[in-house]
Length: 322
Ligand code: ASP
Image 1 (tube, rainbow, N blue to C red):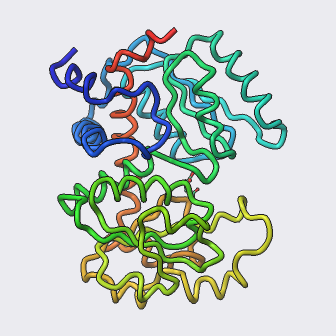
Image 2 (cartoon, helix red, strand yellow):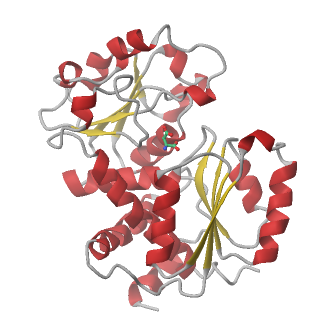
Image 3 (tube, rainbow, N blue to C red):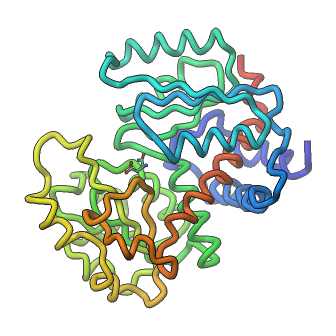
């Protein structure tokens, strides 16, 4: 064990990574610092390490995913783990019951880390209480998506050198977004100023308790901000109609050069993906490498997931919990 991982043991005393809420600034910084090393590692020709050699990582996805699943798969493989991907159709899930059956089945396979994505908020925590290994939340309903917030933070920190005192505008479908929730917790914990910009129909009733400034107008919400984080309109989670029409939504809340002009001159644009071009973001702007760091976010994702896997492994939990 290196000196660095030995220190990690004491500094990250968690068995699972279920959310950002509750993590301390030091714990978040530890994960980001370790991720930095992996960014460099991932740019080398030989990207492989043996930190998790002999360990088994299972990606258990009850909801579709492109970036998160492949990113965890790559992260696990680059650390030398055996990686299994399991996708389970959501249509046949019976809340609770199937999850517990799944846990019993998985325990019998002795995995060391489970990455779980599930359409119900709280389902990943429930599963973590029933399995004998470390669990990472790969997104649960509209609750949390911790590794997305960490990779967003790493992207921002590498570009702007810090997180504290930055003004970040999170725009769009906040109501259904686990990305928004995890980012709000992380950015607040690290001392950034968080604004949310959305129509009232796309904000949760509890927004006032999350420590953010609320705007219903893009130009007011974006004025002077350092970062503009756009969110996907999550139609799959909508029961009923939340916006009058897609055209109107883009007109008032879609990010384009005109609305962006009130932000800081060098404000960065982020989006967790997948993007709805022409709905929440203008297509040309999304591809503008002078402003958009969307591809960089994907790159940071692999590094952050390697750091999370290594940290849970090096705190003595992985492989020794049963
Ligand atoms: N990929 C992100 C998530 O799983 C964002 C999105 O789907 O809009 O939450």
